[in-house]
Length: 291
Picture 1 (cartoon, one colour):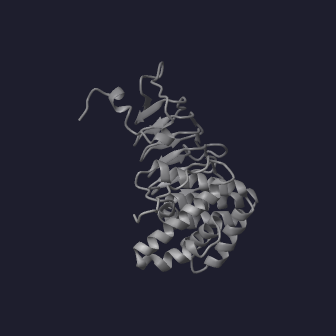
Picture 2: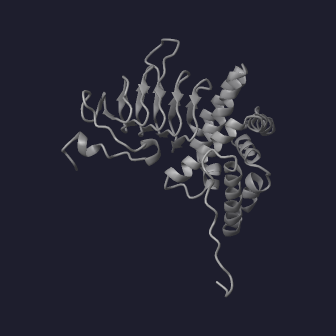
């Protein structure tokens, strides 16, 4: 560093949910894109068209989703206008997008930057597209919402019914094979890994899908069926099959799933697993057979 120059650290991120948060994240994304374009000229045109040429996060995201989800009969320009109109007119959706970006960046050690998540994380992209499909569903534009669901499933291998309700701060980690049914509800700050099913139990109609509380962590390959409640801060082990309610702050594992510590006095944890991403702390409690 030349004499007389000082290294100024980046300012800390504003509090989650603050009015300044969206602008701060967008500033970070643009700085990351410029850095990557300089480091890898082969990506310069791509980064310019998807990020650097846009004036806001919602414009960049709408452009990117439009290009990802378009087809020969569902044009990217139509999708861009659709996404941009909905994101621009709904501050709660923009806030959820920022919370999802932060969830990926700070929970997933493989996420090296906000721009990496925005461009490459199909779980994040599928979730944002679902938010638009859900908005269309609530506006009684159901044929378009279902068409969008189909494209999301085709492109991202994530199948979420447009009626499903999803909170903010969501991490779909890897995301391949995630299925979320029509009457499912997912709370805030939930982390869900690949090949997770939130499904029904048969051909019954009505309210038939799981309700996932805030801060829940659901491991890879878990199947949760029926109109049951997974309590706030609960943890569902990978590969588990859950058919009954899981109390808050407990861990369920196995097929059929059982509570670590037993159903009478299950072991409870203090951390929020949806944020800590701690998948394996229950192993020692579950069995004395350790490989």
